[in-house]
Length: 92
Image (cartoon, rainbow, N blue to C red; front, side, top):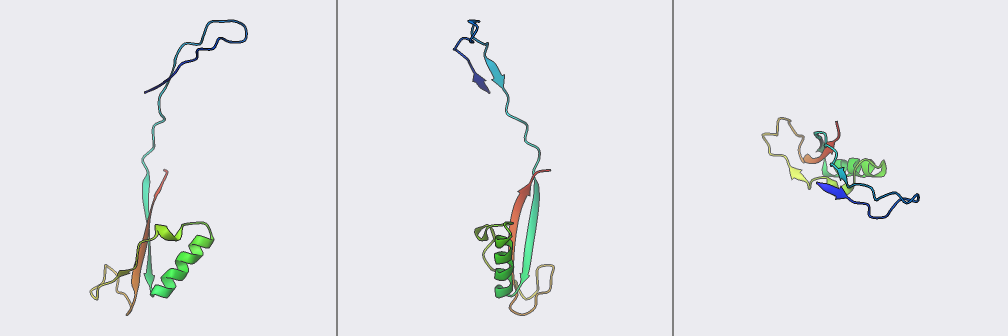
């Protein structure tokens, strides 16, 4: 708990203000948003660059290249496809 105390009298010579209790604001639950890019390494890099230019996400926020196994990850990749993802937390 943060308490702020005022020791200087007001301009009219009144006594000092009593301590004020400041409670931190309640943080609303943050929602997770996950973005996935699946495609060739060049195409995923190009999409990340475009999102960076638009100001949506910094390049370093994206995962490194993840090679998709032949049996897929709930998706069936084309040959040489990779997966990149970005996880963000949004306010409700």
